[in-house]
Image (cartoon, rainbow, N blue to C red):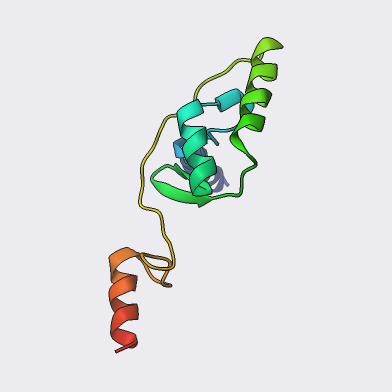
Length: 111
């Protein structure tokens, strides 16, 4: 029984660490970062922990308005960091594999 509890705690700690490693949405009122939010709206997504998170956004001014209302009501704002990562697209990624290995395998399969 004691070992079971230890394994459970280890798993929970690992899950908690992974959740903390992900960057928050830069357009969220509590994490608003103007520069990062504008880029996220323009690119239909943002980077989180080095991985691309595709997301559809409304126009930028609506997020700025939500942030202003949240901050003026006394909300605590912690700006999301500006991250960069490789974004997958039909031309450069997302080929059903793991990064360069998947792209290589895919290109060889089509030959």
